[in-house]
Image (cartoon, rainbow, N blue to C red; front, top):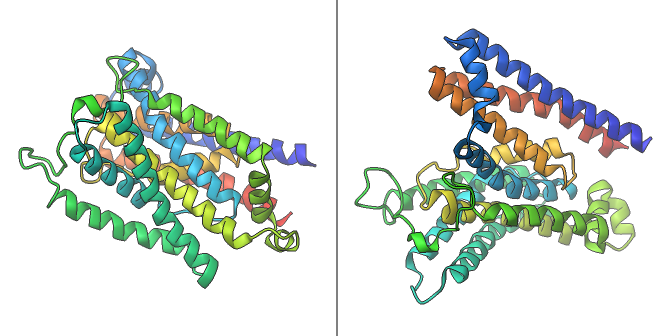
Length: 344
């Protein structure tokens, strides 16, 4: 039965990916002036040079880390909809630290401190939603989403006000000194050493979830809260911890973006990354190892769409519709499987 369920889930995920590709091809056929050229730009160009391929892989890094955060929340039967705000807050806190830290600190110390403060801020925001659910039965979906909306507006207020770079024509913070940015490993692309850290996190959480007591108890809380209580497991504590870890990973991904490819925090810089991470986790179906191919697929959709928009003149609104429809296919195919597994 378990093997049949896994096969059914894999088929649903494969169907969602196939429908997304078919939709992309249809959109290009309808709206691209040169269909063949658009096909090349969507399916091949992201892999056609070191620069494009490196940038494509770099875009998977925040999706991997944030996707792991969403997956941890899923495992405990929580749904974190506040990723955008958690990522934003972690990025802004990391940027402020990097801009004001003493030059006496070496680059390695700055990277660690920025990553820590980003993860800490994100975890604190996630903890609020966990506490509201654990003690006052407030839906974590509602609280995390509303908190995210508040935090994004507060962050934008600082980015366009107190923290704005007065020498720039853009709404952005000042540029972080180059010596504090993560070293790049695939020049001339923006890919940096954070890719190794993202892969390490996949292995770490895979071992934690499959081989540890904490991972087992978290799974039990997600599968059956009443049984978990009967076994003496603190469901309340695991709900809070799962939301904290989820928020912390979102904040960490934002902090690594700031000291990596971005180098600063621009208004709206996340560009829906928090929502894309949910699609990554849905595709992965609770498997930490599956986070990597899921992130690669979601990043491929974005990279291909961006190349088509620039190279074939397809309007950005059409590209946005394409990406949204692809996410809808993924959600529609995956969520029923999650619901069936939970009922079982």
